[in-house]
Length: 153
Image (cartoon, rainbow, N blue to C red; front, side):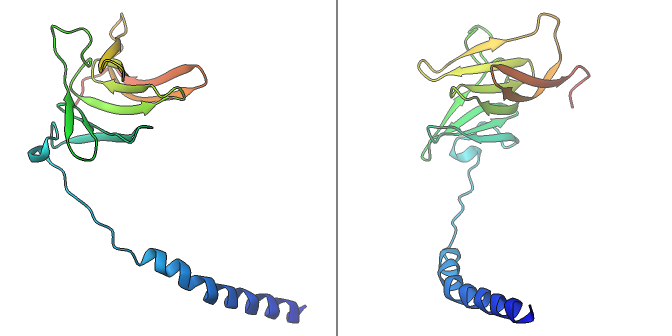
C-alpha cells in the first residue's frame, strides 16, 4: 500500500514538472489594462454594472445613462422625455441578456429592453409604481426582477 502511494506521488510530481512548464509559459504573458473615463466618452464616472453581450459590445450602466463600447468608441443612450423609445431612466442598476439575446436594462424607473435593429428601447413600467428596479434575471420564459419601494440613495 505504501509503495502504491509513493509511486502515485512520484508520478504526480513528474507530471507536474513536465506539464507545469507549459502552464507557466501561458501565465507569463503580460496583461494590459486601459483606463476608460468620461474623457474617452463614458457617460458618467460612476459605474453601476458592466456586461459584455453576445456581439462583443461592452455595456456600462452608469448614473447618467447607458454606455456601449465597441473597443474603439462609445455610444451613449440616455433618457429623452419626448421620446417614448428612449431608455426609461438614466440611472442604470443592472444589465442582463436573455437566452434569445435580448438586452434588458434595470433602471430607476422600470425595465427597458434594447432593440438592436433600430437601437431603440421598449419600456416596461408598473402601473402602480413598483419603485426602483435593482436587479433582473431570467428563468425559462419569464423575466424576474428585484426592487425596493423606498427612497433611493
